Length: 351
Image 1 (cartoon, rainbow, N blue to C red):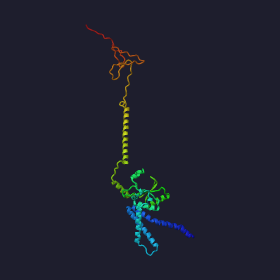
Image 2 (image 1 turned 90 degrees about the vertical axis):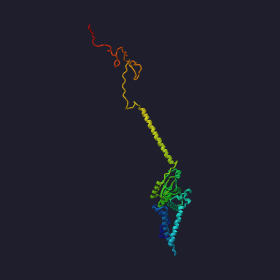
Image 3 (image 1 turned 135 degrees about the vertical axis):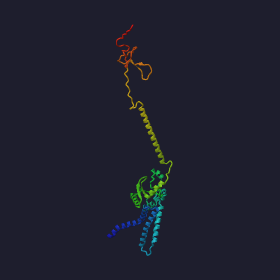
Image 4 (image 1 turned 180 degrees about the vertical axis):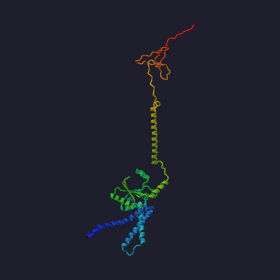
């Protein structure tokens, strides 16, 4: 084998195979990428699909022109015929991708019934990739509050798995990652991002790849306006209402307990500091006069007979006062009472 022939097989053949693969993938890339770019540009879902359809039709017409000229025939197809062939092929493929889902690519038939609730652009992108990856399995699409309750998760009203108010479509799906190689999972993630979708690998209930079509700014504003106009629904015996009532009851019980504790504290302070025993209002008590033996004392406020105090050890017993004797303030008898001082008076009389 000649050296130039070897170089051709080593270098030109791989390039030729890569070019052939690129020619096969180009129509699908143009279709989904044109639709996503038009959608994020502000068009409606079906107008975006129409834009992608027109773009891929142009690509197919170019392919038909190249194939027609490659056969070196004398009679060639007219341009209008080629255009109609391209448009019909694209419309047939779009209808197949939007409304037909193989049972091998879905977890169960209950989830397959939710396929028409998904956004058309997201359906188209996932269906295109399932043609190249037959082992792709969709595990979840549409959700409701009952589904979150069954999975023992908190209801996320902002989740894109819930039907959106502005277009009534679900903007997210979950793809299975268990039982698949990491290379396939990585390839699926890269392809979805290239198509214009947002991906997230998480293990909420099980390991899966979350793929979503993000909301546009005007969609968020429209949803906010619809939520303001939507009347608030009053659901009886709901879990939120029961929790709110429980919190209110606990708050009332706490306030009542605080009042009781404060009242008990005030009563304890009132009993500890009774009238006349308060620290700042105590009056100095006068010391009691020394008690002397034999001196009659009577309790304050009593009207009974005066009793003589018993004699004190070491002091002589007080003698009772004699008739005509005056009692001093200290309780001792006045010895001068009843006597006269000075010289006796002389009386003179006149005859």
